[in-house]
Structure formats: structure tokens, C-alpha cells
Length: 374
Image 1 (tube, helix red, strand yellow):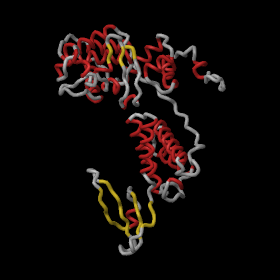
Image 2 (spheres, rainbow, N blue to C red):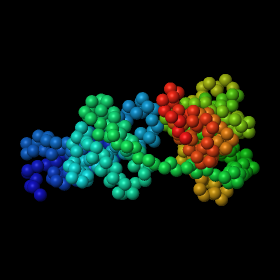
Image 3 (tube, rainbow, N blue to C red):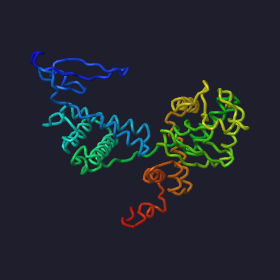
Image 4 (cartoon, helix red, strand yellow):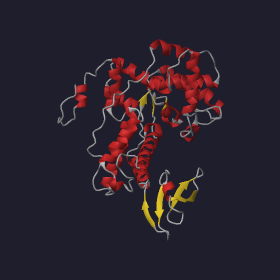
């Protein structure tokens, strides 16, 4: 190893408190660190930066958040995917490929070798496909902004991934679960839990959408709920019919008699206009119930009912499957569930073994350029 006086590396790091500090170490040791590395000559002049500029990743994510209304979870996944790819480029682990110093030097081979690297480490096909999609979208952005001259990911074929069928619960298991939920009790927690479970079962909302509901998102007179604007739905609101008189009655009872017991004010009267932005469902501290809090509630009821394979999303899947069994129109179901693509909704038709009689028309663009998918 060269003596200290020959070359040094300055490693820029972030501490857990996000305070910045410098550390000095021999250059060869620094090259193996997962950090932004600068090699300095004896007089301190910066020569090269090894890790591609991560600011480009953050700029890209900011655009997705502002213009595409991507959810927080999707943005977080994209950040992790692109950061992992950046670290891979820095490490030079690819066969016969040197570490990449900027995004403009990334080639198709770098991307292909990265995907093979992931597969060699037994990443799930769906995870590899998502990371490839993130990389393709990122380089499309860089190309459009003139950061790179040619898009190295443009001709990469999208991998075929078998979509796992959603997990639902049977009618008998659903009956067991709701027997536990509907046990005779007039405690505020029991009434809140019944209202939440019935709302999910009647509307197919995402759990993240349900816990993000405010009082103003619920219109019991019209029998509709308006989820949206939060991270769970990517900031896109929609109106969903509750469709169950029993559920509406439970929600009205919870609001009129029991919500204040958690620290929230009663709903009703002239003060309602000032309460529209208050959380609908509260925890025992009088704060908005979280997804994790709901999961613990559901888990407790499922355990009492002797059910093990159930998750918050199971209720949503079961709602969609029931709608398909009842002959629901796929476009209507897509709107109810808030799916961006009809193909996501059609998974439920595969699961139930039913095919939408209008599928040929649904799969065919309105200008008629493409043949129907059978």
C-alpha cells in the first residue's frame, strides 16, 4: 500500500444525526467504502469522483412525486433500488467492468450485469423486475434532461413475471372473523373496530386510505366515502359508495356517541365545519390510528377466531373477489379500488375463474389500432 504521503482519500459521510463530517484514510481502503470518494493528489487537487451523482436520483424522485403522484412507498422503493444500483456501479463488481464515475458512462452491459447480480443472490423475480423498471424510468428521465446522450436501458426487454394471485378468506372464515368482531360489547374500542372492519369490507379501501380518512371525507347522508390525497392512494381521490345500510348505521353510532371517548370531539351540530380535517378513527391517545395500530387490532381478532393467514389487505382482496363473483363490471371495480391500470383489477377475474364479458373491448384502444387480447 502506498505511503500516506502519496495519495489520500476524503470520504464524505452522513452521521445518523445527518451532520456531515470528513474522514481521511488511504485511497485504496477508501475505494472499497460505500461512500462518495475523491482521490487527491499530493497538493490536494480533486481528480475523480467514483460514485455517480446521487443528486440526480433525488431530482428524479422529486419529479415523480410532483408530477406523477407516486405514493411514498413507491418513491421509497425507487430510492432504494437506484441507490443499490449506484453502489453496484461504484463497487466495480461487474465482470470486466471498472467502477463508473458518472451516469453518462453507464452502458447496457452494466445494467444487465446488475440484474444478473441480483438473480445470483436469489432476489425474487418481482423485485428484480421492479428494480429494472426503476432503472429504465430513471434513464429515460436523464435522457430527456440531456444528462446522458443515449439511453442504455431503452432496449431492455421487460421480464415476464407471474403475478401472484391475491389471498382472500373464505366465506366461512369471514363469518368466524366477524363473529369475534361483533361480540356483544358497548366499549368505545369495540364500536370503533366494528365500524372500521365493516367499512373495509363494504368498500374495499386500502388500510392506509382508511386510517387517513378525515371527518370531512365521510358523507353518511349520501352514503359515500372519499379516500385520497394521502400516500396510500398516491394523492388521487375518488368517491366510493359504502353500499351497506348496516355499515352506515355503525359509522353514525361511532361518530355520534363514541368517537369523543378517544379524545376527539363529537360529530354533529354547527361545529362540524371546523372538524372536517380531524381524523375519523382515533387510537386510545386521541391521535390518528396508524396502519400498524390497525394491524394489531385485526391480528387480535383473527387470533381469537382461530385464523392465521390474514392481513389488512386480505379484506380488500376479499371485497374485490366478491364483486367479481357478483358480476361487477371491471371498469367500475377498477374505479372503486383506485387501480391505475385495468390489468391490476383483472387479476381478480383470474382468481375467481371468471372473465369479464367486455374484456375484448377493454383491452382494445378506442382508436382500434391493436387487436383484442384473448
